Length: 294
Image 1 (cartoon, rainbow, N blue to C red):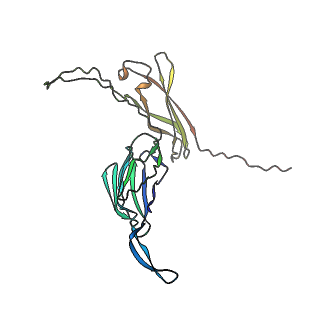
Image 2: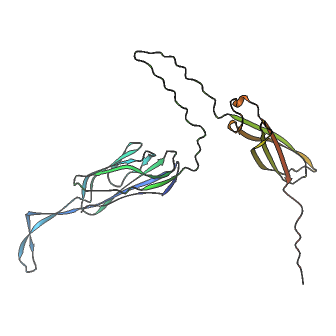
Image 3: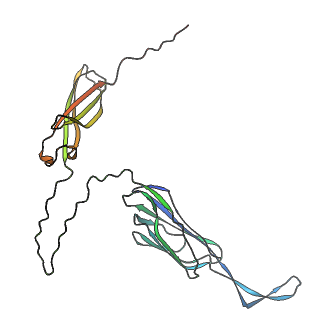
């Protein structure tokens, strides 16, 4: 019979960008029935006469099995569980070897290996779990494992800073000192952080307040541009009468790439306008529920 089944499955069809998967390899083999015409055994036939028959013996389905697994470069093998048959060894972070001395010696039997992999790349998409998997044994069984795929979801990935453009330089032979002018380097990811405090006047006791802060920027031509809005709930106070409520540290982040001017970056001044809206959330009024009788 030899190897009768080979399988490979993963624990999920989808994973996050840094998700972990369980991979299961399974192999089933059954013994071969071998007859040798030169080895004769006497058997009693139906007529009661002795007759000669070839001697039959069983041969293991597969021996000296070696399976080499290499996972996709976007994955890393994190751990290997002990298989129920043979031994498994991690060769490096992306490959392992599973060795089984014999399988299917006297009856059909299965071997199972489980290991865990983690996605380490930053790119989403449908990816093969393994880069390659090879099988060999003494009997020369032809074995093919499935190639499962997983859908990797990395969410929305934004790269605000690009890699800097390299500047080529070289050093001549037998030269251990060179002087090179590498040009200009600009400061990156600059901006302003605006922190504001505001006082809400005459807030009644036990009434929450909804507060909106609106920030705009005024360009050199006097036009306004939106730069942010924050809406927050101000907790109610327990004072016996109306009082002012101070709201501190309302913070806006204004990157420098939003500025319409060019050439001076952080060295230029910028003009902003802030507006605030506030209203009470809680009220003592209730809708009147009335029943109309005709």
